[in-house]
Image (cartoon, rainbow, N blue to C red; front, side, top):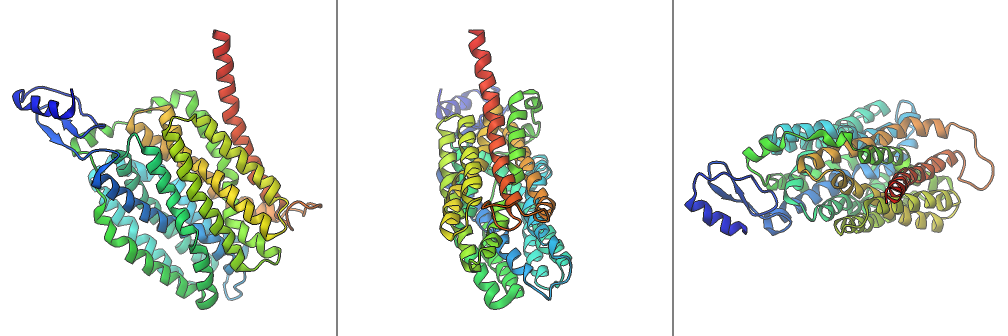
Length: 448
């Protein structure tokens, strides 16, 4: 029976009980009254929420992805007080809080669904205020507290209500939708580093930060009212009861371990590629261009792997391809990269495959559990696990950069340790996934 027939039948059986359906256009309640819902995976409402989410992700996530340019600028600022070795913590917090705070923000969005838009409104001004406040500080610790901590806290607060809404509006094409969301930051990343680098060089960090704050406010503020949930409050009440059975499934721990390991080195190229280029006497403008190339490849990679995950291509296979390609490129291209050409090739390969792995979080979640509430919880957990690596970028990079210079033509100056960690972490993540699937295949063959 299709949805329209169900609705007509309801008119003649007003007290018939039925279970809610999230996959169609109708939702029927125990009282027998049928309500029409907007369709999933299509229609104006679904696309409106997705497009608004793309703009938010592109701008609010695109800005901290430019931190490599800021770090290069701050490192040369003699008037900035404080320990220059702490500068990476600014970008670490701006990005890392999004990951580590994922379970808490997701919990609020799930526990209090009717306040999801208010949660967006709560986080939005914190991001703007963080940039404005940063423009008035003259110390490294001040930048850590404003551009890092305040911005990162605001970003994680506003992000997961949007993710929750997208999880309701997109079902069968969820991989594509989340791939577009993830890739959107790459769109701005393709040109934002060059713009930020030009602004910093021309006007300094104060004007640059204020200009970015105004741009974020003007471009995103009018979009907040467009965000809305698809499901009514009664269905949200049911979805609040998350089935935690996935914690007992080995596949959860396999994908969780791989995500954690891959995250340990994933962010290092984004943070240090511009300064690495500078150490080769490559101009700061061309260093920003490397991040732009990486962002272009990110857009293509995340959309491609998101699309393939919807087509039922093996999640394990896609994840291994991403990790092996990113790890190999790090050790061969970045490790031997002493020219702009090689570094440009590395940026393209790493952007396509390294960021493509991030799109696998939704596909991994669906491979473990099909329940929508569990998928949302798994997504937040995987994001948080990857974020552990982001938080550790600061202290790990300081330790590795302080280490001895490796002799030979691998890396430049003190960067060899960073490059090795980037490559090995991706390759080991692939080994974890491939090892598990190989073990499962062997068990199946023995049982037959």
